[in-house]
Length: 252
Image 1 (cartoon, one colour):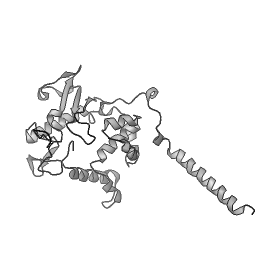
Image 2: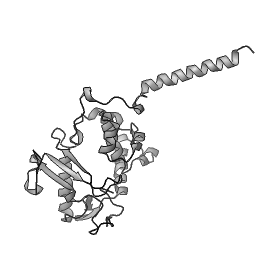
Image 3: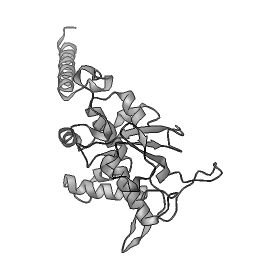
Image 4: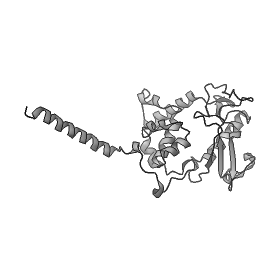
């Protein structure tokens, strides 16, 4: 809803609003700031290294938090993952293609027609993620797990990254705009779990990982680690063996 469409040639609008703006993000949903939260009026006139933060506003979103605003800070240590740099790339690429501030930013060139644009769809995103999954995990083309990757995978991965960085469940729910705690069912379910955990020193999305003294304690769903699950299974097995022995070998 916030970034992709269902069709390549058209976009969904907020029909309840008089001007019927797009549901997806447009350029005016992003505010840019210098150090000290000094607003930047025209980002094209400001060298990108001078931009320290952005503020994103949602006109509409799935969790019904209409009008919500959230700041993100520049991440100079991880420029590939820097949210400010990412937004600048998205806006500049979109304006280069459709040259219209009021159109959705989720666009890409039409194949074989680089000066024309089409809207990015959830289906196309899923196809791309499935292809990336095959290459990253060396899956055969017919592997049954490939279909598990979809446009929703982006959000699930973000939840796992924050979880591994010891952010609280309530923070993850608010940061990623989950309406409930259903995101808990997605934690630690990805093939990329260990590779992401070791590759990431989280200054991600402009968020510093909390120091050890303030990190949240383990939550209920975190207590069952591989080692504790092994001992739990072994204990249950031992208990069942004792019960079986007593039932079948006790005197009448």
